Length: 104
Image (cartoon, rainbow, N blue to C red):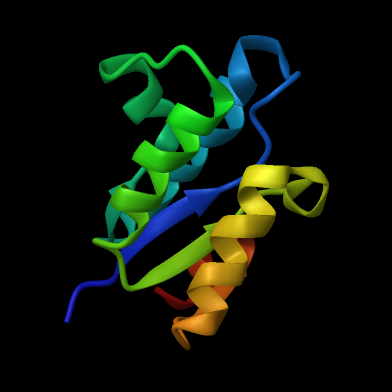
């Protein structure tokens, strides 16, 4: 079964909302055959006015996944902490991008 992974990492306060990290993570995971939900792409396609609106949209997208790939710095991100908490509560695999690139 193909993994459908959600990329979780810091965006707020990062230049271009951490575009490069999210872009290259999605590229690497898709090259491994994973389906990917990239919140940076969601933000471009569905612009929201507040952090809370973005979080609401992203959590809905997270619910379509089967695991989470974390980016460096995720532990300092309010949104990523919530995304990982939810995934772990649902007993989904949560691993670093590096792990998924080697094991997906």
